[in-house]
Length: 207
Image (cartoon, rainbow, N blue to C red; front, side, top):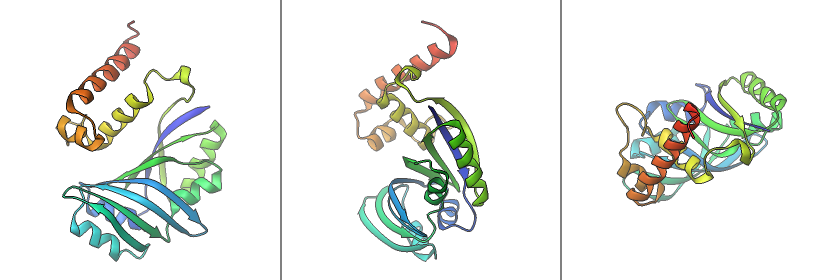
């Protein structure tokens, strides 16, 4: 069964688009979410949090409740309620469960789903009907035989990409990434090297 990575341009009418585009330096990760009808509740991990970002969330009509559960200088864990759970509604309507976390940065959500191809097409079509602009970036097998990385290697690489470790110039350092993941810098360096080596060898078909 295929596993797809999608980028979805969010509707400008939504609170998450307004907040994330006004604060493009912040990364919003939805860690947990559920919806009932037209309301939703979730846990949000915000990297690059500021007082202005929190105030912007509170000012949004689509955010009906916001609680700061934990916070330090760079990061906050939030519980929020919303009247605009569009991604969840689209996924529910198409019969495709979203895999968390869903990452939002500068008006675009990055998410992963595992479903038959016809369901992936149904999800894409539903996103478009709901005023969202989806792009399928990658499709790969979801079986163990189809993966060349361990789950931990994939998790670390995906987080590195999300935070801009592989951008030029880098948005985060190796130390920043290690702190975000809660691992030692030396451990992270070794894990990245092994994962990168595996991917390069697979791409070049070198054993």
